[in-house]
Image (cartoon, rainbow, N blue to C red; front, side, top):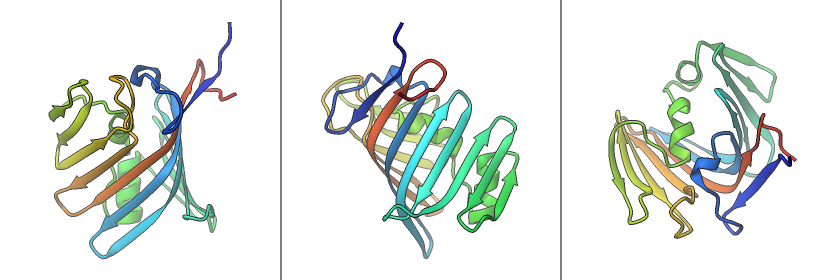
Amino acid sequence: MLTGCATLSSSGSVPAIDALADFSLEGRFSLQYEDKNASGRLNWRHVGMNDDVLLSSPFGQGLAEIVSTPQGARLTLSNGKVYEAVDAETLTRQVLGFPLPLTQLTDWVRGRARSGTIERDDYGRLTRLHHDAWQIEYVYENAEAQSPPMRLVAKRTNGIELRLRIDEWRSLASGGEEP
């Protein structure tokens, strides 16, 4: 009868990857492409096929929000400027000049792979994934077979490098409501 969410942090209890169908996470990111660098904080909420990603400066000042649904994607900058596209990859290509695979990133952050060349550790968790032109490397901070990755590095052959450090996971229970 109780529904809610479980907080899953790098210092807390170990979650089951399977419990992360709907999730929210907090972490830090670093993005490099050619001579461009960006870094900051990330708050991401994924429910069903909907994503809401808030990007902030390293000190917490909101920079941008990306909302993606099956109907399309919208990027709102801190100055109020809004960009829209049919999906998140098209949106990031238009705004940033290169596509970020936000759809695949949903699986990648959970240590899941639907296709590609896969390497696993002794616990059966992904350690390296080659998908399309991307190479993703995983770091786990717990020796539990079902623990999610806490760090990942995604590199694309064209020079894009995305680093994520996940500070806290929350598994969202029935309907995506947080306690």
